[in-house]
Image 1 (cartoon, one colour):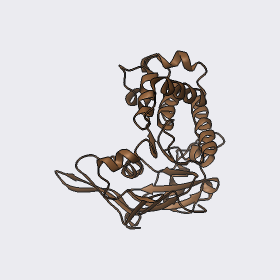
Image 2 (tube, one colour):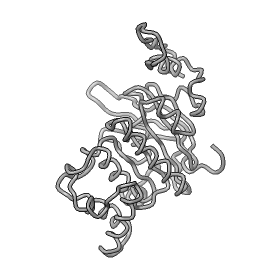
Image 3 (cartoon, helix red, strand yellow):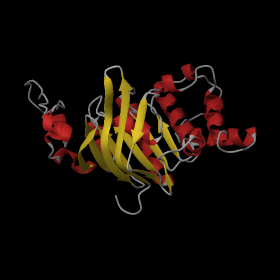
Image 4 (cartoon, helix red, strand yellow):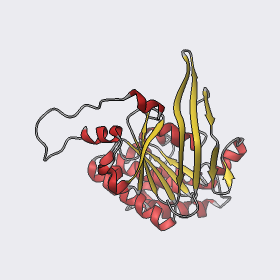
Length: 280
């Protein structure tokens, strides 16, 4: 990253109270983000999503967020009250979730939901909100925005639903997008279309993007930098274009577990875990 960071995180920890004692989901994560595409990868349970949610203060009631620093531009995210979070969520930092089927309200039309996301932050007329919504639906490559505006979520495909979610998150004009597995429920062709939309919008609007994914190949081709997480800790940071040359044994293990079309038919590599990885 070059220049002044858009987001600066130091020693972020997220823990949860359970009947069996505290569980640490994120342990001492530190990174800075500029107006770039940062990938976060790792297995399920590695702390990727909890890191993204902690940035927005979206932690379950039994959870606790601690950090030495969580600075977003000129504002600290530590100790914000609900009013402070309302000023940040959506308007300055937006989050695109994995499956639009569970993210969109099934009893509200698509247009009404996107309009609501806009008017929650800007006091504009209904006509202006509708015009802005149609513009944003067109910006995410929806061919007939007028028709889609009046549809319900069950009347659109998964790929179009994800585009609608992106439009809803982008319409307030945020500086940072956190995309949590936004393409995992989509087929490969639609995945590429959604990534191309995100890429165009991030570049054109000069935003920062945190892209959370299991797919190392996808992240290596789409992002600028990659953080590799294991059991709540960052194991390695590497340029995305050099991910295949990563040196940490955990990252190497993840890469070697991927099947290759030009490989032999021997059993896939199994990841051997070192207890030392848990302590850094």
